[in-house]
Length: 210
Image (cartoon, rainbow, N blue to C red; front, side, top):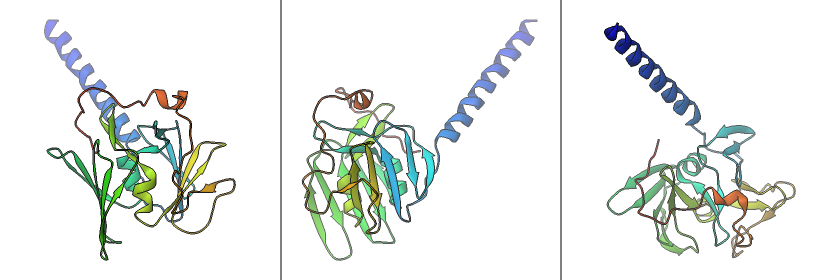
């Protein structure tokens, strides 16, 4: 009886592990690169790419500087970029081979290095990449997207952030343009949408790309 009980326990554990693995695979959707536009919503873990909705495991939030922070994995997918993590330097490298553009950001640093076929430049951001539970790196959307030539638009009525690859403007949205100081104009009130994603104050956790 003890052997049978032990065997049943092992089988139950395997079933639970398999279920968790399947659930993780289901939630970890592969998101295609945008053709026209992608819409993120503050506080929601979904992104709409060219009319199709995909699930993320972390929702965008607005940081204290009024910047929209997006999970690096999903932002990279939408922009058609690959990601590389350097654990020693804590840098995230995003590369779009087709456009010949590489962006390098460092957790905790407000500098973004943009390398293209025509020039290399350093851009100073007013928000730095951070890591939030369960080990997700969040990047300021505006700087990363605009470095690829995309425009970023904010609709305050429904808290949506639209990344577009052409000149078409969504109804009700206001364009950030290339000279606007902020894409998001949000007061530093610690809104409920953002409280669950507040970056940790302790040591940074390893970044997970999966």
